[in-house]
Image 1 (spheres, rainbow, N blue to C red):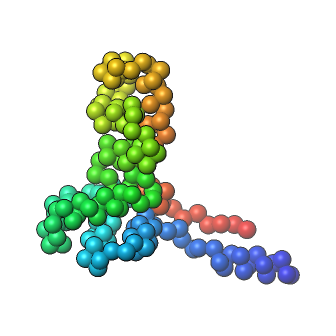
Image 2: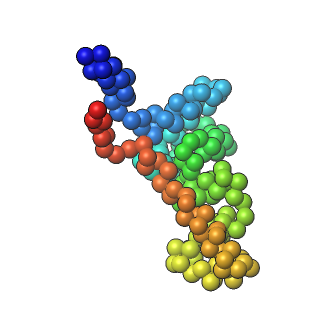
Image 3: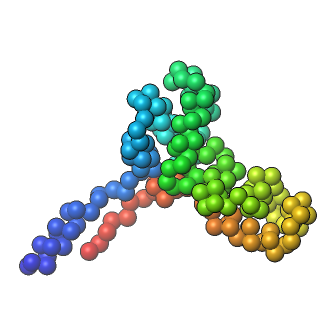
Length: 167
């Protein structure tokens, strides 16, 4: 009977739903010492992220709606891009991958490939990448392994179907 009560008590303390990406990012935003205007702008940016963590709305549009400068919007967006999960707040795949590489301290060949040769990478033209980067195939393959370990959709872990826990 005591075990059954402990199990019920444990289940009662479990969260009923996982945190959404928006909730998770808002918690991080509200932990910072920002002005009310910066917090409002950050909330607006976070509200415009899609389920994969990408910013769907051009910053220029947010600036018009929020009546702030583009420089302010860029500053707050870059702040959000430092949040967890890495890559969140990116405007496209290239930016998402570059943010993640920067977080990992990878500013070498992998970053150059993502920055300058993403189209060749998508077409799997590895020899052309090696030639254009003045690198060996082995070096390119190592960089590609690093790139392949990145998450192109960093927000996807915070959505989807809630799976009930059976105890």
